[in-house]
Length: 143
Image 1 (spheres, rainbow, N blue to C red):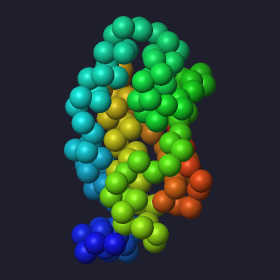
Image 2 (cartoon, helix red, strand yellow; image 1 turned 180 degrees about the vertical axis):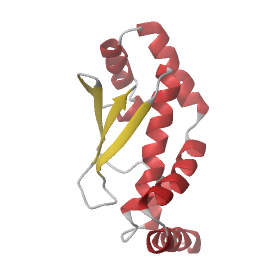
Image 3 (cartoon, helix red, strand yellow; image 1 turned 180 degrees about the horizontal axis):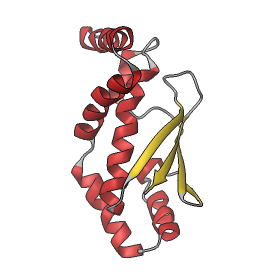
Image 4 (cartoon, one colour; image 1 turned 90 degrees about the vertical axis):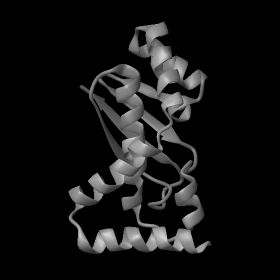
């Protein structure tokens, strides 16, 4: 592990020790929004414009492996998963990284859905690889 990755782990540990949960989430959410490539949002938005229907859009997103490739609509929610952690910083930081760090990925996903669909979205991470699960799973609640 590099010095930078150790620094990231120490920083997140410090956030956990010194800030309340909502403040930690807000700090890391800003990181996630900045990490999201606008080209990914543009591609997802183009799929939305081409499909115009949420079920067809979810199928198109899966076909293009956007949003993990494992999206499933359940009523007004979209459930998704990553078979592994795709965040290079989390992977390289190694074991011991706090699941707090996954608020970055939560905001990345929110930005993807808001940008693609043009409506509000809230993402709840239900399990994460960083937290010890075999895969990452989340629920998107669309506004």
